[in-house]
Image (cartoon, rainbow, N blue to C red):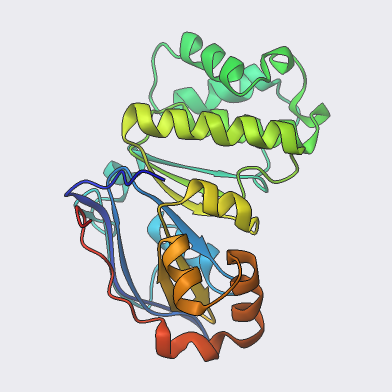
Length: 264
């Protein structure tokens, strides 16, 4: 994949730690994401991916560490940051008694968009669910709901997009189309994405860099090709399974320094 990195980090995480009582969900995470880059945040269930994203969105307060998004500290400028980012998850429920168009209109108003109808309709067409516009959201299939969440996430034309399992519940044909659309939108706008998925083939196709987490720590990072080579795994999926079962075994080879933006 062509490297899309430029010289500006848009997300900088330093020493991020989060404890829930005696449980340490995140343990001294430090990494940066460069503008126009797609970063895969990977790991088994319970590795800390969701907690890290919630911290970056200001939904969870870290125990320690710092988070800067688009050059601003999340604690001091959360509202300003959130106006320029968005989030989509296959597992986010939208009001089921509203139509698809009504749901998107409500979010457009929440985002402060004055004239969003044209954009709303174009996103429905882009993600191929325009025929659902007047249907009650609760009647949609899980794959259609996932695409509706993606439409919602693009309404405010974000600079940074957090994607949690963006093709979950989709059949292979629709999933391929969605990945193509995401790449198109990413290239058009220089959009930065932080991407979680358990589909390792999708990760290899989409991501410039990946970070593997296990028990709240970074255990490997680099481009998909680099870490497959470094770990001597046959594939990213084999590596995922090995980390899920024996994450501690990789800590001695996981401390690649976070690459600076603009590096070759």
